[in-house]
Length: 107
Ligand code: FES
Image: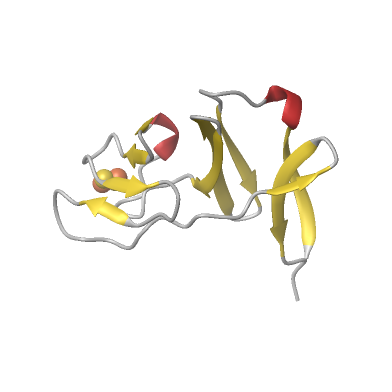
């Protein structure tokens, strides 16, 4: 496993939201109510960007069709059309003065 740094701790604050791309992974890192979350950046419904989604009270709402997901475990909370899978969520890793993600190095 390899550590991929995403952000310096000093830059994090409530309201922080940023997108990152690591290889094929599109990630959304955000902090709300003192909690830092790392999820996939595209909606599992039809792939709209969640970077413009509304995040509040532990729920992210996709701007495209209004599907809602829990930010802690990614479970689907509300579907306005057909159901879809939940969001992928990723553990945040702290290393030195940075936060990031641990990913496989590859084969
Ligand atoms: S693409 Fe996100 S709710 Fe449809």
